[in-house]
Length: 250
Image 1 (cartoon, rainbow, N blue to C red):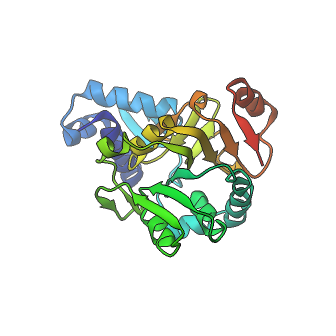
Image 2 (cartoon, rainbow, N blue to C red):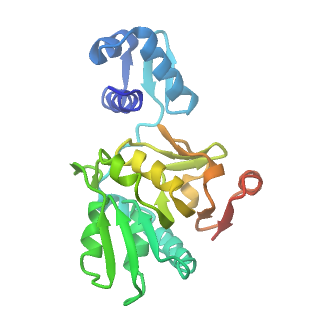
């Protein structure tokens, strides 16, 4: 089991059990206690868990997974606002990768009718929406369908490595001065590859995701070009983004 996969499973185990001993985790995942301690140190440094007396506990039990339908209704007005802002940057884009985030899906809903695009996606929800748009050429980056995330698992990385686009349009579970983060591992490798195969990289995130980290670092700011959000970030965040060459639009 890869390190990232193990850490995600440990995190889910903690969310289920609230608190658990290091020795129990080591036995469950078939690794040494030292390996588990390194995993827990990583999670503690990102603010996801607390540790004491050989045990680990979740910090914020509210950070649980929701279905696509539930997520799409959370902060719906902010997502729609971000999508409308993003649409203004689509004029010189002919091909793009879009992930399965609910904010990115909102952009697909308002794409102008008849405007030809070539779209690559690993999102089942995006595929359902794009299938009704005959003027858009859609390519599915396949794999195993993960029903929880409504996305295709990224075991087709060799295929993804051959794809180059004008833009990559994705969201995240949170962002901070360190970069943008995801809470889950499904699809993260495809996103990382596409960020490196794109002329412009857009991160879509409303203000509620600011100063928030997740389990996995998706990308540092150096690789990103735009943060599309619903309002101006605070002064310190703006300074960090500007220093890294990220244009903030809202």
